[in-house]
Length: 175
Picture 1 (cartoon, rainbow, N blue to C red):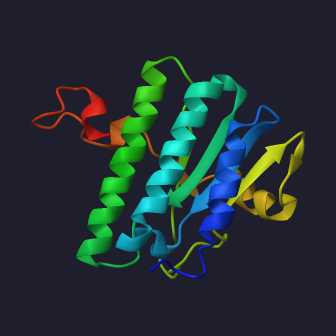
Picture 2: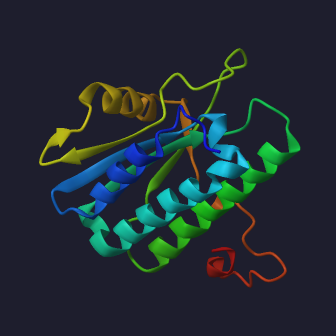
């Protein structure tokens, strides 16, 4: 059973919009810990795959900024495992896109302050369609955080150990 706070129909609709040539940018925020629940893994994977597919098809014609947590404010073993797997997969996908000479989504890891237990921005998918954001205010909140020095740090292939026993320095084994 999925969390009612995450409207999967809205997420699917907005993510599908990435295929449109009229959409030139997107900002995706997934900082709620609910995303790490096992019953949301399917939609989380759908979103990841749709972003990668759109980037492969659209190349430099689409700019995607994603905001995820830098680290978890909880110590649940299940959440930590899901979080690490998700970040590893996003990092591997970005490396594969870059290796193909394409633009990869820019993944910004949000750094929570010591007293923060949640992100100061809501989870969202907002797209820039024909020069207009689907929700200008929400997109502005996310973009302000991305532009704030020290608020985020990028997720790159250098942050992840992708050369494990079967990695052979080829990130595709993690997909």
